[in-house]
Length: 200
Length: 200
DNA sequence: CGTACTTTTGAATCGCATCAAATCTGGTGG
DNA sequence: CCACCAGATTTGATGCGATTCAAAAGTACG
Image (cartoon, rainbow over all chains, first blue to last red):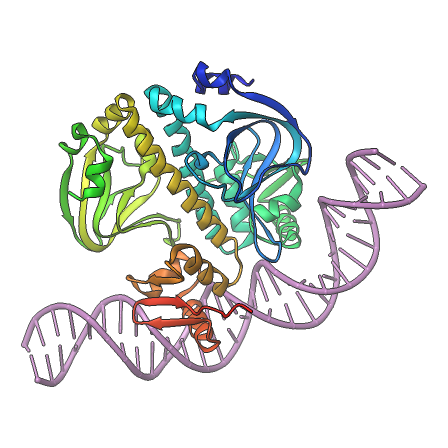
């Protein structure tokens, strides 16, 4: 089990945690199912998505390390599907034990609150990004907010990134190419990096 | 002080809460300020927004009853501005007292977690909405998800709604008119309502 | 080495942003 | 009560950027 998880969870909970490997394409859980476990992604990648009636997938969360659907702690059903996009590992934690620990261990509850706060901020930033109209504006915003020093590794390909930015992959490819030609962006394999503009 | 707040907060906190009236246009707090208080909107309307460098405002949260920027509990600075869009009342709660109560009162912490969970879900729905491309798709999604039985009161006008949907007001006006003509939407003053389509 | 998927480029079309302007509205002060 | 003003609402014309549809080239993987 990852150290991050050990530090977050009290023993009463982590002792009940069950790690397992995931396969690409596997569904960890489905919308409308009753949550019995909380999942922590410890390797690979899992996306939380909703599927419209025409089958268009909307990516709501992309997790490489952290909880999927933390917000379903008290929910009657999941409100999204969780799909494995890259094989790896998840840790399943019984929700009952988690709830019990949260009501009994205030320090743990506070750590949990911090985690939720971070997720709320991340989602607000994502809303801000999706409020932008141009493709390149969204891309640059992503690099500015999610990247480290304007650098961001794109592990699952630009096509997958396109659905995350809610644009077509064609538009994204063209936008990347255009930004590169303008000298505002650089590509090193899977890494996109903003080119620092010299301030006057 | 509203009953909802009384039920949520323990006495140690609610005794320190300070209600006050708000004026239209007033800024409750600004980005980059250090959070000293947590604000509960008890009347009127407050929006949480970020302003880009060209002054384009992005609405991240619109609150008529509830907390603004709950996620800044442990933050060093606010990450958004809070602006009063309709005069009313807010209750200011000292953050120190709040934090203390959360670490000592597990039941309160659990109620707080539920509130954050609800906000996370709301934000995911908002991301889903902004992922839609068409204006009318976004509008219909709003009515489906935020409305009660497809009915939603628009108190602050369609123009303000337009910025929330991240479209121009012209496009929204036209979209509303078009949907009305198609018989998919009805307007009764400030209320927008989906027209129920007869299932076969 | 074939198959499935991503990446890339091209062309046509469409919806929305943009700019402009007219009308309507609620609220203010004379 | 009316004139007036600021803001919201509405309609029109134009252009651009993204979607859509199509197809070719590159790449990973069994």
